[in-house]
Length: 286
Ligand code: G1P
Image (cartoon, rainbow, N blue to C red; front, top):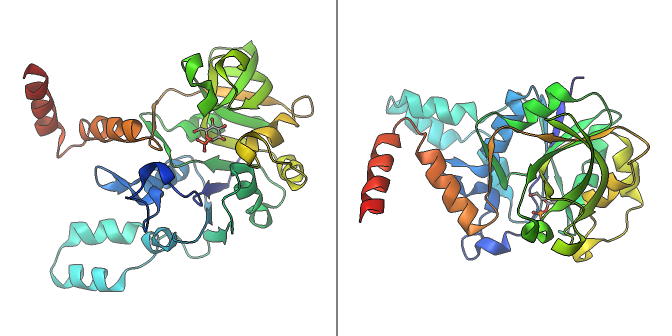
C-alpha cells in the first residue's frame, strides 16, 4: 500500500540538551555533518514518501531555512567553483509544494503534535517519524511500508524492562518473527507494570481513524496528549502490528545516545572511518 505523506513532529523544547538548544532546534544538532532532521527526511524519502509535513513551534525556523534555498551561500559557492558543496546545499531543496509547515502553539504532547497536521493528511494512511530516534543501517520506515497491509503499525525493539518508563510499551500477540501483533499499548509504564520488554521506537504508520481518536483525546502520561493512547483505542477495530526493524537505533534525545550515534556514524563515514577507528583503538589501549 502506498504511503505518500510523512509527519515530522519537531515542536519539542529539547530541554535535555540545554544550553545547546536554547536558541537552536534540537533537530538541527548534527551527527557528524548532517542534522538529525535530515536523517529522518532522507529515511522517509528512501521509503518513497513524497510529501513532508513538519509540525514546528517557536524557535524552529532554522528547520525551514535548512530545506530552502540559501541564495548568498549558493551564489558564493558557485562563484568559487565549489561544486561539491553547492550540490549538497541545493539537494536540501525539495520539489515546490511538497513541504508544509504547521505550528503547534504549545508543546503538549506527541498526540497533539500529530493532530495539528490533520488538515494536510485527508483520508489516507500517513507515516510519522521522530528525528530523535536515529536508525543506522536498513531504513526502518521502508521495512514498515513494505510490510504494511492497512491499519496501524509501529516500529518496536526490545529494551531492558527497567527502561520501560521512557517508552510506549506493547502487549504482544502473535509473532511471525519480524511482525508482532499489538494487543495492548501503554505509554511509559513503570517496569513492574510494563506488559513486555517491547518498546515503540519513533516510526509509525497511522490509519486516518487515529486522527478522529486524537480529536477527543484526553491528557495521559506526563500530563500530555499521547499518540500511544489514541493508537490504543484502535485495537480491535483495525489491524495493528509492531515491526522489529533490522537497523541499529540510537536515542539522540539523550546525551549518551547522541554521543554513541556520533561515534557509530563516524566509524562508517567514508572520510572519517579510518582515522576515527585508529583513534578509538589508541584510546582503548591507553
Ligand atoms: C515518544 C513516544 C513513546 C515512544 C518514544 C520513542 O516518547 O511517546 O511512546 O516510545 O517516543 O522514542 P518521547 O521520547 O517523545 O518522550
